[in-house]
Amino acid sequence: MKLKLLTPIALLLATLSINAKAQTGRPDKLYSMSGIGFALPVGESADYLKAKFSTSLGINLGLGDGGLFLYPKVSLHAFQFNQITPDAGYNYTIQKGRATTYLLNVALGYRKIVDKWAFYGFAGGGGGFILTPQAGVNAQTLQVTMDNKTNSTGIIEAGGGIEYNIGGANLFAEVSYMYGFGKIQNRVFNTVPISIGIKPNLSKLLKKL
Image 1: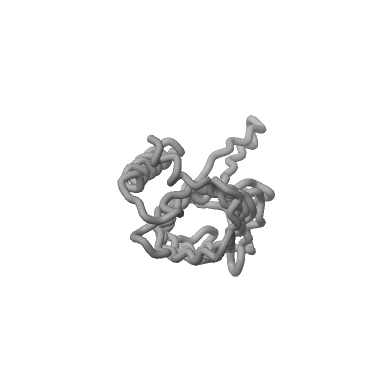
Image 2 (image 1 turned 90 degrees about the vertical axis):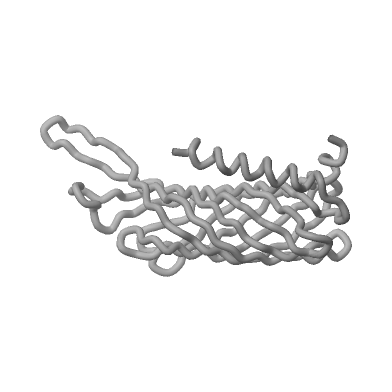
């Protein structure tokens, strides 16, 4: 399933890169983005999730000659999963398990550059999958069979960040709010992703190709 999700993402990145190569006029035409951090569960999500190490991958594609940019991002969040009620067909709840997300958000953002600093905000929507563990117990053979439940959901996400230019790349810190329309454990999925990382400026590289 991971391969099925990553394939369209790779195609999207390649298409946007080709479009960016044909455009000129602004120094922040195309950035790749790689971040690490935590996604903090809020609201009902805190009843069954706890934050663990997370990553995010994306690109920033400048639109026009102003500060607008397109921001596709894949969120690979990880959580500790403390199940409240067993899933249908299972008799036991999982405690201290691991839940992971494969969520794609496509946002529209605006960046303001001031010397070596930049400030930006964004908002958009998308969707994907949240995998939660399941455990089937066979009392006769004393065996536990582990499996994952795939929870599909749509999402909306809005946030902002700050960047500092170090030459051919920007260091960044970003915080956002993510709301999921699907439910897990009969509760909504809400989280506040916080990440830091690097955004290499690919604009100069593409001009040389």
